[in-house]
Image (tube, rainbow, N blue to C red; front, side, top):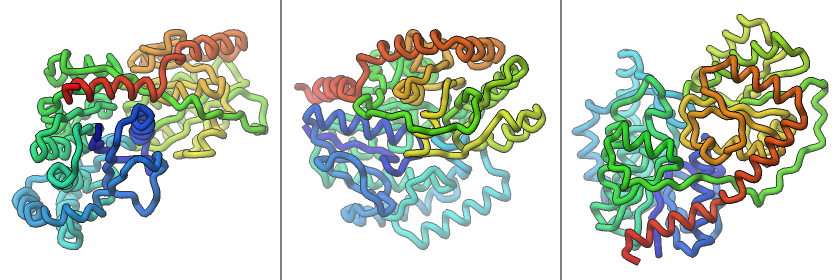
Length: 431
């Protein structure tokens, strides 16, 4: 069976968990004997780390799409005045509409961009021209639907849904949409209605919807009025075959480290982590808190930290990847995920590979698997602080949490997740 898989990012070019999950799913499908065509907006001059048996198509180099340039330009000129403009970064920062003068500047920038570049030009990120690129990617989807041979279309998250719909219309093949997060997860109380509309159209057009957790399935069914029978839950996983080693790192101090690693956005709950840190520091002195990541709430968190006067105990590392992530995990004693709304959350599983105990929010898909991890409501910073203190003071408890959580993880793997996805493919293909 051959699958046309549409994604917005793929390692080594990632902004968060989406690209990592796409790679894990693709690698698992290969092991389950699925023939993949993986499409991304651009390779940005680099090479994918996917198995060489995967055909990777970079949309900005897909020559057959040139035949669709005339239609795209016509459509663009009709729609350019109606395009929603904003600072959209769904996996990096939250989205907020720009002030009117900024919006006018952005429209002018988009028009200039389109005059200078053709449909084959993509930045492939989550910047100001995201909606334009999503629309261009949809035309690539139409081209792929007519030019390529495949049995199933599999689109990851809203940026690829229009392309998936276009590929389905052109090819007549079944469409699977995979939901790693919804706009309600990413933006909390500041949803963008245009993105919600795109998600809704994708859900309606799909022959099957894959949600990364029951938490997400319930969100889709309730918020988008989708029949639950149309939604299958396939949990994400973590690459347990990678043997992470605790580096021989000297911290330079004796205090324990409590880690927050993720985007510093409303969705991830960094403010609650900071508030809990203050309450812990009022009762303990032998601990430091580290916030690793970047995002639109960073200035607010820094300002609040300064007001609390805990700069000597609260540290920022900025965005980390590769060896730097492994280093900060290796140095840490406790990992906290206080997300407001987390469809899944791979990072607690990664922390456990380093034998780091975790505390996670009840509002997360990870809580469905990590039965033995301490859980809190994201906003209950008194309870979170009390759990942090208890965990830091009791090594036996920390070791027990790690051991039991690793037992919880035994049945999750990308191979198992991909086997479930393959079963969905077979059902849609009538096999």
